[in-house]
Length: 202
Image (cartoon, rainbow, N blue to C red):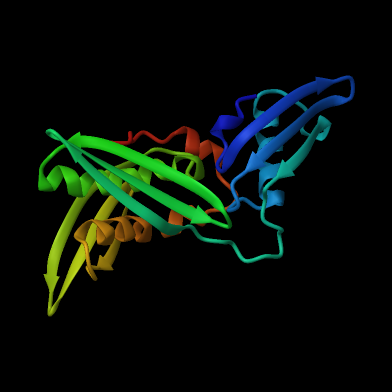
């Protein structure tokens, strides 16, 4: 049973016993316990295991009655060395950190896209299908400057924006996270749709 297909699973252990299957999973804080148990049993049924014989222990989940938490941009660090540029993004929630890092050639367009891609890389465990970065732009919007990011998600395009308050790269990271808000709040996952995703990350 490949639990890596499930959204929000950090680690998992599956043990067969005389009474069935015992599954212990460590989830990210975004995942509610009831949703994770339902997803594990649905996956078990798909691979021919009686879901009633599956006992699931969930660690790290959000209690069902609590509001769904949301990741915040904790840090963005960049580094240039020779003709290469590296962007690293950290998203935090309740002490849990997700990190994404992307290395590209130097150049403004590459560097803009590397920050957005680092955000996408950081949320891979939260979204059960591939995402594709489509476009990153900085626009003049009246007296303000605006970062706009578009992301391909299955058959949809997600668009996010953020005002440039300081560094352009920080605004790009925030705009990418804004684009992902809707898909990050999906519960529970739809395994059938997740398995048919045809886009690939860039």
